[in-house]
Structure formats: structure tokens, C-alpha cells
Amino acid sequence: MSVMGKIAAKRRKEHGTRACMRLREQALVPGNMYGHKQDPIPVTVAAPELLQQLKEGHRVLDVDLDGQHETAIIREIQWDTFGKHLMHVDLLRVDPNEKLTVEVKVELKGTAPGALSGGILDHEMRTVLIECLAIQIPDSIPVKIGHLEVGQSIHVRELDLPPNCVCLSHAEDVVVQILAKGTQPVLPATEGPAQPELIKKPAKEGAEEGAAEGKKK
Image (cartoon, rainbow, N blue to C red):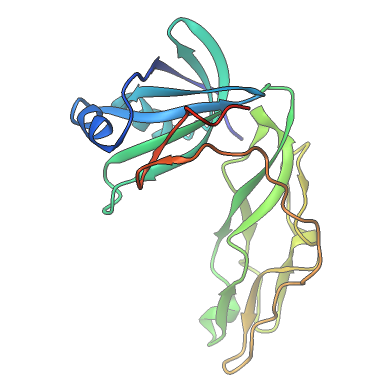
């Protein structure tokens, strides 16, 4: 379950690719804070602080923006090509008591005996769509596969969800299965709840950066 972290942010006055490159050279990560029918605000955060929050698994943050505190979730992180340096961060304002619709990764736990005996492990769904409070977003949904033999599967309806979380993905979709060699995977159901767009995101600056100006709510 997500635990709230803390981070300091400052308003960003410079925009564009060159300006953002200069910020990164100073160990600052350019980004945006947006949502809740408020104007998007271009911001910067210290790269070491953001990396620490990510390392500790914090997705919900108490953001100190020039002395004003707001609760936000880390909506999107952009890395460089090699996945070593932070390039951009999007912070979405939230009310800790409001429900959000988010995608959460599915994490397989254990080793399937069917795979050891020659079957093929088919991990169909890497993420599922859930609804929960902003402060209760799980880091992942663990799925125990230590009992799966060839021909057996685990469906969305069988997932063990954290308290107060509701899964919106199609109940009959296969999350993971053990196939016999030469067997075709079972395709996900075509019908099911649409994935609602939580909020419209601001446009990007150049190829990477999010531009706040011109995208007023």
C-alpha cells in the first residue's frame, strides 16, 4: 500500500528543451503539477529527492510548492534512453479521500510447477485497472502462481485485492496461465468497462517536456 512521502517543488519560469536541459545539469527535474480544475503549474524538483521517493515506493506525495502544501500522486515519470536519469515528472493533484481509477501492475509470485514440467508460462495481463482512494493505491497486485499446472489459469475475478480496492478490468480475463506447448493463448474478452481518462494531461514541450501554459482547465 502506498505511503505518503514528502518533496519540495519550485515554480519553473523557463520552458522549452534547452531550458530543461540546463535544469537537468543542475540536478533538477522539470515537470508539471496539474488537476483538480486548477491551472497547470510548471515546476522543478531536486533529482536526488525524487529518486529517494521512488526508491522508497512513495506514489502519493505531500508537495511543498513554495511554502504551500498540496497532495499529489506521481502520475508519470520519464527517464533517459538508458533508464538512469530522470527527465520529467508529472504530478497530479488529489484529495486524499477521493477515489481514483488507476492502472496497477500485476506481480507474479512463486514458480509454477506446470512451467517446470514443460509448460509455457503465459503472463497475459501485466496491469489491471482498479478504483481506490488516492492514499490507498497499491504498488502492485501480487499473484501467487506456485500451484499452477499445465492447463490451469488465474482470472481477474480470482485476484486477491487490497482492502477498499475494486477491480474494473473484465472479470473473466486471464491474468496468467500455463499452456501446453503448441497451445494458443486465450485472448482477453473484448467487452468490459472502458478505461476512463482520469484527467486531461497537458501537452508536451518539444519531444519530452510537459507545457503548462495554454492548457487551462
